[in-house]
Image (cartoon, rainbow, N blue to C red; front, side, top):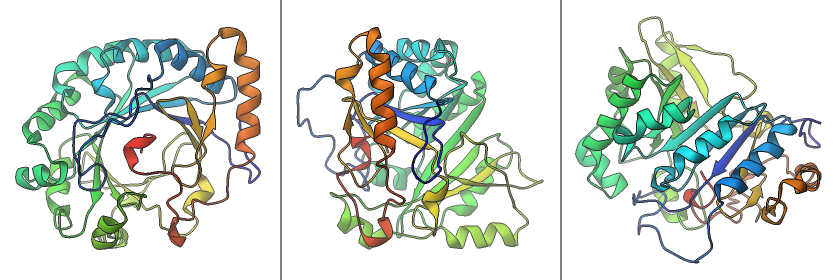
Length: 325
């Protein structure tokens, strides 16, 4: 039976974190770098397989592998292959900072990865380095070129809108996608428990970009039922497209279609607001599938109508890397 909540929302999309470790030090997420706070082991390939099998049986069609930085896991190809072989899963996507994409893009695609999102917060090298805390701009650009070369079904670039950092780069990004089949996405900065001060100083609404696009003849596209929350615009003069994710917009949560599982085996109903539902005890044996599915159905009935970000709620999320952004 399809996973659905008390507000009629159906969940076709699972965001699955496989590590909370990240090798970047982004100002809006981990400005002091990743801090090892526990020795807990991340989900194994078999635990991941059992998790996705259960979600697939209750309607999940798309899985996005997230982190931290998922490219840090040496068994990433095995994870992708395990997910690919599960009945009902039609799309496997991944979000990465792109540091080793040029080296591994072909192997990941051969394993079954269909779509890839690459975090690129600036196309200006010194600003990229300032935002991310690492000197990896050229590596990421080579990774984007390699992703285009190997031919993923979809390639998206994610840029977090940050006032006083990258708020004047719209024209650069538009030029970048003019002749590239890439979806450029701008994501409004979100407040987390450990980043409130940065958020208050640098949050920027995406409304200005939306107004510009509409004035320039960009047309909003329809969303598929397993698409993420971006409003995507296309233009007849551009090979690429442009998306906006505005979590502070009115009624943003009405179309929520995704759930999350952390790298330590907790199901999260929202990026914000709750501590998660333990499922790791039910992914130790293949015979536990029925009990796991029952727990998933019970859990989604407690999902709130909204993330309440507009009220300043950041819930139990210390930073975006903690449960997969």
